[in-house]
Image (tube, rainbow, N blue to C red):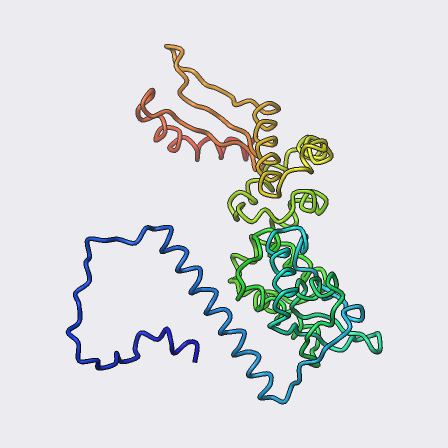
Length: 325
């Protein structure tokens, strides 16, 4: 019913009135368009949740009211901090005023009789714990693979896990011994993206990730840069000093990320100043900048036209000499 209301293919009712031609000179502000898109996105997500609940009820699954104290988190964590962001506070207020609208999914605990384990709905569980009220839950028998795929699918549909949270989730699944195919299904990503997620999670110490937090505005390129910057031996010491400062802990997660990457960028330049090569007139024609992977050479083709091509032509000869030294 909800989706039908937004179906563009529904025929317009015959009212007998002459349709008015819209005035295309008026444009909706981009902010309003974005807001409308977000609203429609939420409606679609809510509709998907209703569909999932309807499917569960059709299978004969009942919604149970469980004591949240007997429900444990998933054995694989998918969030850095579930209760620190404003969205969680809004969720608590919503459940307090309107009740829990969507049940969580749990399975009977595999080793503890009378207890349960969450597949998805951790924050709803946390809100019910805080409010000291029963949590509505669907109880389904799931093996480990089914649980993590359901957990990852819920996160993918909500689209609100940050890049680093997805990376940590992937690393936790790998540590648990899950095959790559299962991890890719849980996160709904292709193999190349899976490799990037695991690379970042392994390149940044867990203590640093925990100190920075989810940093939702810091996407994949910046987290990959942070992991590369941490390849310098001195970087860990510098960053550890930063994250222990009170001024660092008192700001939001995105600001903490900005401070961390800014500090490491400055440290890289300070510890590894670029090597400059000059021509006969004293102009800088080649700049060699260090990184965790080696050196990057930048040729000023305006100061020395053709030098880039000359160096490329000389590389095979230089490599052959290096191999036979």
